[in-house]
Length: 90
Image 1 (tube, rainbow, N blue to C red):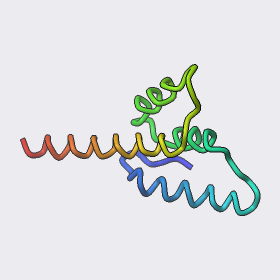
Image 2: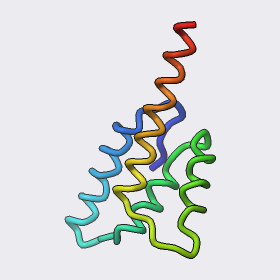
Image 3: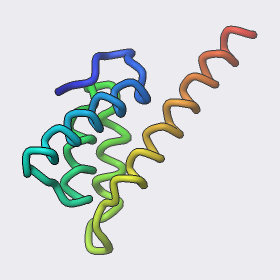
């Protein structure tokens, strides 16, 4: 499952959660870090910079947490939309 370029992160997250819930209902479970990595890998190429930044931020320290990854991605999407709106105004 891959998010389409220009797609909504919230919509993609809903689809992602639906699939992982369906898998869980048949006994296929992922731990929190694997879910975070799968979500990062499902983002389109335009997100590679942030994906690399998030991936590199954990080396030698802690594990990725799904909620932290989703929060960072959603925050960046809001920042990007705000920049676009700001550019349109000027």
